[in-house]
Image 1 (tube, protein in one colour):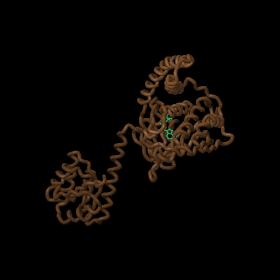
Image 2 (cartoon, rainbow, N blue to C red):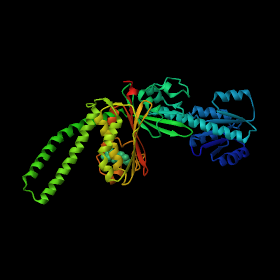
Image 3 (cartoon, rainbow, N blue to C red):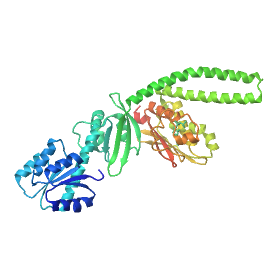
Image 4 (spheres, rainbow, N blue to C red):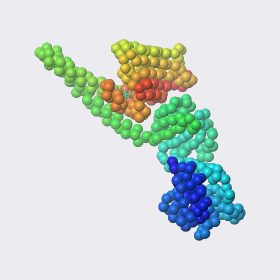
Length: 458
Ligand code: ADP
């Protein structure tokens, strides 16, 4: 409502003009006027005002008869009645008809303006409340101390918020869904996105925004059907990748034999190198795809007490040549005596390498990369930060999807778009969390949070 529309109904032309031109218009309201109740009724039908101010005593029908006709026609517009007589009968009838405010003549201009503002605010709040209750997404607002300020119907239904929960109740007393509580209680930063699996099998994608003066806003969308589609797609991809690997191995085998034959000229040998390079790229892509399906299916999750420090050191060592080639400075802070986690060392190393490879790839020569490892309460946190090209807010939710590559990345760097899907799947199978904070042109920071053995109590 940028310029709320107010209908002013009064038979006294002088009062009408004064209020319209000297009180309402200067405040930025769009004003429509009528000189009688009957005329007012027609104006409401034609213009659907946001608020009505009406005099009580008018020659044709009274302000309250006018309001009664409006109700009969189904209009529930906020209504302010102005009257010169303070009769109890009028007051009682006005109340019954739902008059939202009642001003006695002569009234103060500020009194009228305050009343208008309050009613417009209330009606906006009511409408927003109604709209939020109609949407299927979960909407939840807390203050900065994680106390509940607002929740819609969908939140009650899916997060089992007990009926009549009071505003101001700490959220941890109300919402017991583990996936939700685990992340929310860590006070995650702005734009954190995570998945929440509910007991009834539905999966929601949660997104957190922080607004000063309001608090923490969480919007959660049901992505169960997308997850199912993803599963079907993975099944298809696994089958195709497996079937393609055998003929590719045969092609590589014969190419090798041809090379050993010795009868190829220089040009033929160059062509053959190109073919070998291409076949190897396809094989690498298929390996990534098969890895992904294995991780997603949870086949190779062999969890053992693992030191993340060792994993990260191996990963750094594996990337040393790339770092040197791009003359990038690397800063490491790998903590001391960090607790172990339960994990699959091979997969965790793959996860760390993928994040490091991306940091190196998407950061220009001479850039800086920082790798941190620390323990926080019951978790071990691994962070890879770069000062490279960064990722736009629009791209951030999608980078975890298979084959997704930001346009800005496609233009400048090669890749399959599978690295982060693998990272996410590995972190998911370890029941951890991964998220990114990034700004285009400034860099990215990927954070992985894994529960420590102390945390699991095992
Ligand atoms: P790939 O690197 O092969 O494209 P990934 O799945 O590893 O695939 O990453 C997906 C996309 O996320 C990349 O194409 C790029 O747009 C973006 N991205 C990942 N890591 C970074 C980073 N450190 N800096 C900037 N963009 C990144």
